[in-house]
Length: 455
Image (cartoon, rainbow, N blue to C red; front, side, top):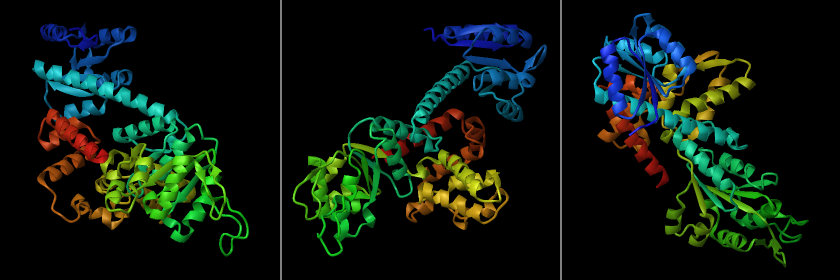
């Protein structure tokens, strides 16, 4: 079956070139042949290809010498063919822009797997780039710094939810950015030009919760010298964020349910209900289903606020985002501190990535700001990081229990991948397994992490 994918095969060995071309065409690829670099350049200037197969030894030049030029035209679309089998040659080719490499004599099955994997990578990259561009274009969500696909999907879902009138429950551990998410949702909603009133339910004394939320009339209690509108009335026609909603007293939960059901509020000591037009966002770091089972949260209120749900994953579940976030916070710190930090060393990056960050993005931000405030100049190295990062082991975040063999294996693969800049071919060599096995193991890990995040 024809795939429609076009390949430029640059190989001077005519029998080998003919053999590869026949095999590729049998598997649905449209193949164009070139026997030298000069002819390949001419074809690339007048035609477009999906992938390039490039022999490194050619009659009119070394393929390695022109690899960077080809890679600039076709990034991540070049598979080099090498007869040396040297790891140094393969690593150099990857550094110059090759997506992958194959050793001669060419194994047909491995050739097909490599090309299919390269095409799958390109499709995923293009989809991810489109998704990120779409998200970045939405005002409000551009404040999120991320590289992980799981976070891209969370932001994409949030953007879709923002366009609806429904109540949204934002769940996540402390420091994951629940309030920032609420701000972005409000900004991108039809109510974006109206007020967003944020209420920290955990900070309101129980005896003041009703008057704080729903207002009060003059004389309602000692010191009530005038009417007060309350947070809900202040948010009329806009959005109210009930942060840490799990901390609300049960009696206030009952009153809140009536507001959500009937869209009216009654100020303390007020005689008549007042209509309000509000979109409600709620945030919590608690498991509200568990709170309902323990009779600490009303089931009817939970089901009312759980119309739509957004789960923000902890930082340890999206380690690809740690270094970009750290660099972002470093850029902010450099704006306010006279001594500028030039960057983060590779060893410090690995330590940042290895640590589990129980305080999530907030803890990472505070860590970078403290390093900056200490007057450091130059590059952040391991010696500048808190001791807890230097001595951290992922098992500590598991409540002190010994990690399982699967967890140790997973953590080691992630460490090696991080050290290699997430170059799978290089990491697989270090780990002593095939790239196919590493891809499969990491895909299984990502699927398990995603399942844990959404469960």
